[in-house]
Image (cartoon, rainbow, N blue to C red; front, top):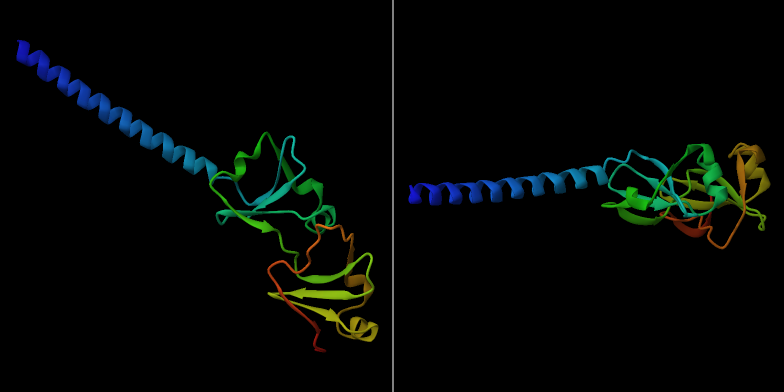
Length: 163
C-alpha cells in the first residue's frame, strides 16, 4: 500500500509538472499571438502624442507629423488604445515614409516627386503642368523639424525626367 501511494504521488507530481508546463507554453503562445494580432492600421496609445502605423508584417513605423497623418487620411483613421502594448513583439522601423506623390515643403518653392524607392525634384512649372498634372496634384506640407520626405527613398538632388 505504501509503494502504491508513493507511485501515485510521483505520478501526480509528473502530471502536475506536465500540466503546468503545458499551460505555461499555451499561455506564452497566446501572449505572443495576441501581440501580433493587431491588424494593419493607425494607433495612438492613451497619454501618448505618437501615432504609429502597424503594417501587419511584424513591424510598425511612427507618423512624422500632422501633415503626414492628414495625407494618410487624418485622425478619423486612428484607433485610440489604452497603452502601447500593440507594439509588443513588433519591430520599430522608424519614421513612416510618405506615399507616392508630389510634395512641397511650405517654406520652400521646390516641388518633389516621390515614386517607388526614388525621389526627385520637378525642375520647372512647365514640367509640373505638362508632365505631373499641375499644382492641384501637389501636397503642401508643414516642414516641421520632424519632416523627412525622403525616408526609404533614394534622393540625389536630381531633377525628375520628362515623361
